[in-house]
Structure formats: C-alpha cells, structure tokens
Image: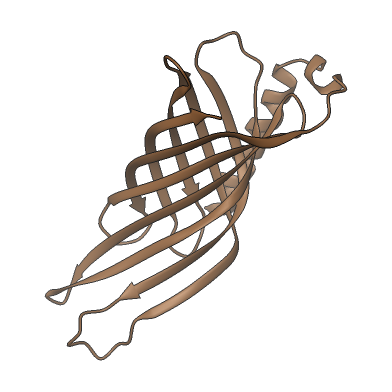
Amino acid sequence: MKRTIIVAFLLLLVAGLFGQGMGNLTKKTGPDFGLKTVGLRVGAVIPSTKYDPTYGISGTVDIGTLTDFLGMGIELEYWKAKQHTNGADVFYRAIGGGLTVYYLPTVEWKIKPKAGLGLGVYSYKKDYPDNWDQTDKTELNPFEPHLEIQLDYPLEGDFDLTGGIRANLSNISGYGIYIGAEYKL
C-alpha cells in the first residue's frame, strides 16, 4: 500500500511538471534560502490501525526555494490516539518532524497549491494502563517518508490561510487533515 501511494504521487508530480511546460524547468534562477513563513495548523489525524481518530497539531516553517518550482519546508507534528481494548484505554503518541521538498506549480490563481514529498524523524510511544503487565514502549523511526498536498490563501496583511492533507508512512501511518495560518516574515 505504501509503495503504491508513493509511486502514484511521483507519477502525478512528474505529470504536473510536464503540464506546467518546460519553461519553468529552463529558468536559471538559483536557490533563495531563508525564513519565509512560520505557521501553526490543527486538524484531524486518522491512524492506519485500530486506534481512534484524534486531533493533531503541526508547526510549519518555509525555508525558501531551490528553484522557481521547488520549495522547501520543515514541519513539526504531534498527535495522540487511543484504543479501547480489554476494558481499558491504550494510548499511542507520535511526535516528530521532517524536511519536505515541494513542487510549486505556476498558476494564475489566488490560491497557491503545492505538493510535497519528504523524510522525517518520528518518535512513537505506546502507553499502557498502570495495572497492565506490559511496559510502555517507545520507538524511533528515522527517515520516515511523508506526502503532503497544501493550499495557501492570502489574507489581509502578512497572514495566509493554509490547509493541507498529510500522510506519514510508517508502522502506524497517520493521515492528517490540517487547517491553520502562516505568518510571512
């Protein structure tokens, strides 16, 4: 399933590049690094296992562009889900972050779309009830892939409304739908 999602995303990304025309690919602009925006998003996260859907919170930082059509961002994310089993609640927490490379299509719309693919480092912790024999378990997943599609809508002043769909592909994948605001620096 994970491999199918990644292959489908890459195919759509390549098709989008060609759909934008080769003009974007031949521009000779260099990287433009630096803090561009910082944001905060909240939303729903749906774990891929028997855990209940939950809320999530995500911080974002736009760190610039590699070219006219490739941008970079850093994200931090937290969510905690529960599963009711054997008369008690077992909690599963995820905290982590990663680097995403975004495809920035050239469109003449007020809404600015972008699609990203990246790698992150996530820590997962399973919390069992105190009266259970199992001990709490923590695992660290380096180089965890994620996909994201994001839309930014400019508001008055230095703020943008932002929304995104994010999929972290892991042992227990998390699929998030986020909405929030970004501040232009």
